[in-house]
Image 1 (cartoon, helix red, strand yellow):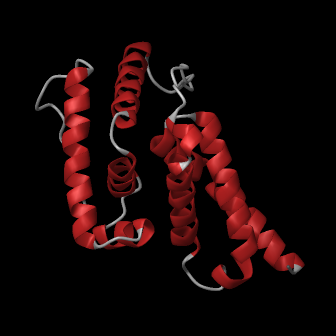
Image 2: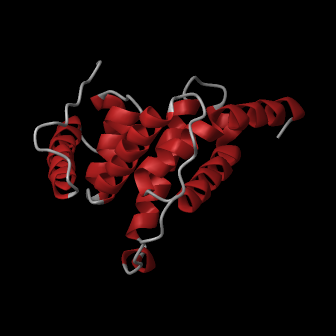
Length: 181
């Protein structure tokens, strides 16, 4: 790889590390695994950088790689047998008053725990559609499925998410999801 390509890759990786880590965390629910997924995605991106960087598809490519790395990880047999019960530390929000911060932390934890109960493909569809703000077509491309499958996985995932929120003590009917596109 040429020096200028190397510099462009480093700049891209530095800019996108935090957003990709957040997306990976929303998918898997563990910061350590999220870090591993981002690392793996960046390794794969580095290997394809000269092909991908010349087009305007770098963001879509790395998001697709990240999602596929996570789906591959979920399919591994030793992952299915693990019992993940460790508490994930929250990062404090210094810019708000304590009451708001506590409420947001509670809501963030509630959504994280509820997302953990949603099946992997449905969770991927929800994260890509509502947290990453991808369209149905973009989500279908990332997940390698039809747009109809994305719609049904998203609908089922939202139903599972609502049911999980009710089980976790959040009132029925209080979850409102809005789409911008």
